[in-house]
Amino acid sequence: MIGLLVLSAARFLIVFDLVLGNDQGLLIVARLLGAFVPHYLAFTLPLSLYWGSYVTVRQLTVSSEANILQATGSSIGRTFRTLLVLGAVFACINVAVVGWLQPLGRYAYRALSYKLEKADFYLRVRDSTFMNLGPRTVFVEKINPDRQSFEKILIYERLDKGGSMTIAAPRGSIAKLGERLSLRLNGGQRILIENPAEPDNVQMMNFDVLDVPVGGVMEPFRRRGGDEQELLLPELLRQDKPLADASVADISSSTHKRLVIALSCLFLPMLGIVLGVQSARKKNLYQSIVALLIVIVYHQLVEFMGDFGKGLAAGPAALLWFTYAIFFTISAVLFYKTTTGIGTLPDRFWSTVSRWGLDANLPVWRRGKPQTP
Image (tube, rainbow, N blue to C red; front, side, top):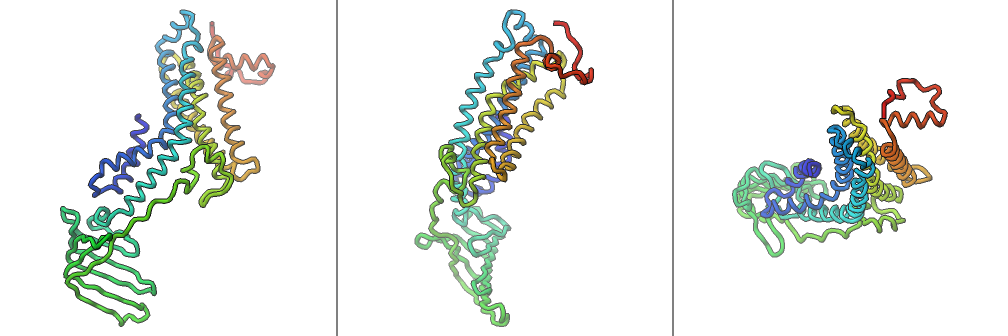
């Protein structure tokens, strides 16, 4: 929840600028943020599962409660196996999030943003701010409280042949002509330059009332599937043709990145248990920092392998799943050694190496101090 709130706060600044002045601003903000929540869940679910597992096991170890449980006959594996089941549940949830909720939410966010960006002029105008409105640039110095009447208006439009038209008026208001909205200007002046090669050929006209179209019939938003981020997981797996802005390699990389991140929930609890059990009786800040860096390194490796693999013949999928297999295997081996041995994990690791006859030239300080069972 903390991660979602922090990430949503940054998105809120972007969303708030889109809905400022809309009568249903808070409702639209909630819809926009809700559509982006699946995007954040894809990263916060594995991280929260991993960090929650680590902190829980660490607290039980530091307070010696894990030792008490072992004294009653409950092993480390039996005590914390619920976290492994929780990891499988989180993995299923995250696959549903990245495979279905995330692309649908992203499309809904873009569709609503498109509707807001194409909204009526009076909903988007800001005080003392230049804004582009089709081929025109509009500047309004002051907006009245009703948001439909304005003061000190300047409109600039570049014409097809290189000329320009400038309109200035002390006041104006919104008027509806049929299906279109117009900005009705009062007591202003229009300056028209049709050919910039003839600067002396300038037409100036004073007017009492002038209607300038500022709105039109909104075209419907495009269908879902404009890029790979809007495709559902089954659609991504079947996609064998490039899209407008994504090659086949890009689509493959995006697909397998989602799956690798989602299925990381299967080994992250094991890694959290391993690091938590190895905590000393006194709290060690550096161990927590290392535990957090591990998951950050994993995420960066996934991003790097996905991008690097696009230029290889094997493709990004091979590198991504190879990275996943390494982390899964290391986590499983360390979990097994943690739940089946006596002493600290480094001692059991180096004892295993010594049984293989590979520690002849290893420094003594690398092996750790022997401990009494």
